[in-house]
Each structure stands twice: as C-alpha cells, then as structure tokens.
Amino acid sequence: MTRPVLTEARAPLTRGVEVVNEHGEREAISIPAERDLTVYVDKRELVTLMTLGAHPEWLVLGYLRNQRLVEGLAAVESVTVDWEVGAAAVKTRSGIERIEERTAKRVVTTGCGQGSVFGDLMADVDGIALPEARLTQAQLYGVVNAIRLQESTYKSAGSVHGCALFRGEQMLLFVEDVGRHNAIDTIAGWMWLQQDLPPATPDEPLVFYTTGRLTSEMVIKSAQMGVAIVVSRSGITQMGYEIAERLGLCTIGRATNRHFLCYTGSERLLLQPELAVRPRPVGA
Amino acid sequence: MTRPVLTEARAPLTRGVEVVNEHGEREAISIPAERDLTVYVDKRELVTLMTLGAHPEWLVLGYLRNQRLVEGLAAVESVTVDWEVGAAAVKTRSGIERIEERTAKRVVTTGCGQGSVFGDLMADVDGIALPEARLTQAQLYGVVNAIRLQESTYKSAGSVHGCALFRGEQMLLFVEDVGRHNAIDTIAGWMWLQQDLPPATPDEPLVFYTTGRLTSEMVIKSAQMGVAIVVSRSGITQMGYEIAERLGLCTIGRATNRHFLCYTGSERLLLQPELAVRPRPVGA
Image (tube, rainbow over all chains, first blue to last red; front, side, top):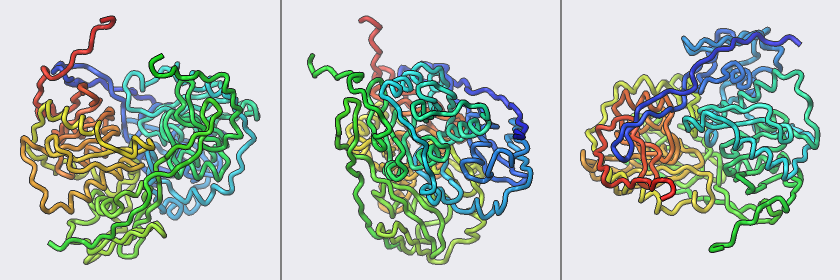
C-alpha cells in the first residue's frame, strides 16, 4: 500500500518557568508545552488543535481518521508539519467528499475531550462489531504496572494526559498530550501506519489505556479503532457507560495498583481474585 | 433591567450502576449523570452540550455569554429547558447578528475544554482590563479550605469537575459538571443574573476556583468575567501561562492544603509565608 509521506517535525515538550511557592520562595519548574497546530486539508483550513506536539503527523492522521474524514490511509498523500508557522498541510490524493457538510455538525463533548466532534459519531456506534477479546486480571495488572513504570512528561511537568495501546500486557505505544483527545487520535494515526503490526488475538487483545475519564468519546474512539477493552485510572461518565454497554465494550476504571472497577463488558475480563490484595482492616 | 424568563428544569445528578471489583465482588456505585442538551437560539440549532444538568438555564446563558454570542442579558427573552427532549430553547429579543459567521471558526482547545470555541477569543484578550485585585495567602487558604469542606457530586460519584466563584474567601457559588467548561459557563450565566451581587473590592476580589487545569480557555473565560485571580488544585498549560502573563492575571495552581505555586501575576498575591507549614524532614 502507498503510505503517506510524513515530515518528522520536532519541538520541545516542556518549558521552564519560575514560580513562587507558599514559602515565598522562587522555584524553577517545567510545564508542558502547548502549541496550536492549524490543519489544512488540500489548502482548506479544517481545524486548529492545541497540542503538546510530540507526534503531530500521527495526530493529524488520527484526527482525520477518528473524525472519519478520510476512508483509508491510502487517501492521504502527505502530511507536512511546520512548527514555524504552526501548520499541518494535508495533501489528499482525491480530496475529501462533501467536507463542508461533514464538518458542519458540532457536538461539544465531555471532559478532556476534543470538543468538536464533526459528524454524528453515535450514528455509527451500532454498526461497530468489536473483536473477540479476553483480558485476564494478571494481564490487567501488567498494563497498570507498565504505565506506572513509564517515563513521562507528566512526571516531569504534570498537566498532560497519557494514553497507551497494549497487546495483552505488552505496551505498543505510549502517547501524552495536553488534550486527551489528541493522545488517542495520535495512537489512531500510529495504528493506521502499522501495516506490520502483529494481529491481536482473543487472548492477547488490544487494550487501550487512558489516564483520563472514560467518556462517550473515548469509548466510541476505542470502538472505532477495534479496541474492545479500555482501562482508566479515572472513572466513567454516564454516556461513556451507556455506549460501552451498548457496544459490549469492556470498561475498567479506578485502575491503580491492584484495585479496579469493571463497569461494563465484564465477560471480557477473566477475574483472578486471588491476585487482588485485601486492604488491611482499619487499625491493623 | 428586564431579566430573561428561565425554567428551572431539574434532573437526577447521579445514576446507580453495578460494577465488579478486583475481588470479583459486585458493588453498587454511583456515577455522575451526563445528558445532552441541544441549544436552539430562535429555533436555530446552535450546539449540543453534554452536561451533568444541575443548572441548565445558567449554563446556556453562560455559554452564550462566553461565546460572546449575546452582548447582554437584556438581549435574552427566555431560556426554556426540557429534559424530556434534551433541548434548551433560547428566545432572543432581536436575534443574534451574523450568527452563522460568528459560529463558524473552530478552535479545539485543550483539556476538559469546551472544544469548540466559536470566534477568536484571543483577539479579545488584549482588550481586557482586569480589576485591581489582591488576595492574601490567608484568604487563599480560606478558598482551598472551603472547597475541601464542600459537599459534592464528586465526593459521591467522582468524574466531575468543580468550579467555584469566591469574593475574598467567601464562596458565592459552587458548580460541578462533567465538562469543566460547562461549570465555568454556568458560573458566568449565574453572575450575569446577579444584579444585586455586592461588588468585589481590591481586598475582597472575585476569585475563580477550578479543580481542573489552568488552560488558555479557563484563563480567557475568567478574564472575560472580570476575575483577575484563578486558583486550581491542578497545574497549568503553556497557553494558559502565556495568556495569563499577558493579561497580568494571577494564576495559582497545585493548591492543596497549605501548598500552592503561583505561576503568574504574583504581585496580586500577598504572601504570608509564616502561614505555610514546612514539610517535616524525611525521617523526622
């Protein structure tokens, strides 16, 4: 398959600033970078994304994919990112049909969400058939532990969301961004480029991890990427819950150390309660 | 002044769901409600907001205000919310000029952000003159403590953002929503309605508190509301930092217990380091 030509634009991910703390002392700290990237498709301005900027080309591809503006990777000829002007120029092979119309409808989604989801994602949900996928509690703990060990901008500067894609408990990609939606879109773009990605199996399924809440948007995007199991250290919103239930998607939240709550699709989670640690009784 | 006629639509703020925990036990927990509210202005569909739904009328007013779609409260004749159909019908007295054009430009903002900010907020920033405002460290601790004591959906169900408006250390309003942008818009709508709100003074200034990150959007919206001091338990993004610096807006993050970091506008914060508690040396 013809792969799009991508630049590899790089930019610093943190910025040092001086702050004053409660002791009246000046401190030098790092904050995450945040830059605007205006996406042009065939010279038509589409949207401006605020991003950390680690992988702008994957982000743009994933954005186009998750917004369902391009059918396949083959439709994209090139993505050229230039941080000097904060622009990503997308060249398609044959244009995007009815782009005005398809980018017209706005839904302001919840949470660390790309607020503007073009088109009616919900309309598609019922059409999605998720792959067979089973995750053991041991694999789940492996996922949570891999995230715990991951070096990150979050650890050095805070204020970013992390997302990761796993096969079983093996981490395939870890992405951070100031907007969680950007992190998941970046993963979607990267997945698109992996022609040689060993296929997931029912016992080594694709698992999506996010530090943020399990919102409707996260659930829908995971389903669109063919990921049937989503894990979060945070909780779930009602829309996220309802759509996951409708999809039979397995949502697991509050996942820290050995604790978790499986909200939906628990038949995909093979429980091994013997691996869980009982909290010490109070006073013990 | 003629005030708009508002419904007082009510809906449950949490929903009970059954989950499975790491011990393989079924647990009944609450998750925050999340419902879609489609806003129609003079029968024209404007946007769909995903909201907890505590104060939909204030939310809609604040949304129109923060998007700068209506100049003043007097322009709004009524806001009628009907949860049965998930609709908010806004009736204006004389319509909104060039509404198509003014709702055309999209910026997908960072974080728990209303992704779609219509129009170019940035264009306005330089026009904003913030009021004289000084906050003492004692008042700041009062703000943080009031938040700590506040009963909330977060405590019962998690997964919501809280925002609050203070005068000095006195809490005027506390609002939660699944989207932080909704919480701040709701406060903006409420502020609009308070004709008899005692004016803030330099020593009893308006202070905006958010549980979420200090993003560009939060900083800009605070400035638009005439609030010169913003406090968060979370951190700051680069855009938030740069805009706050440009505005001379005081941003204070990581505010928990006695700790905080003042990122920008520290001249508005009257430090009282003697009130800070020194962390015990390790091993002590």
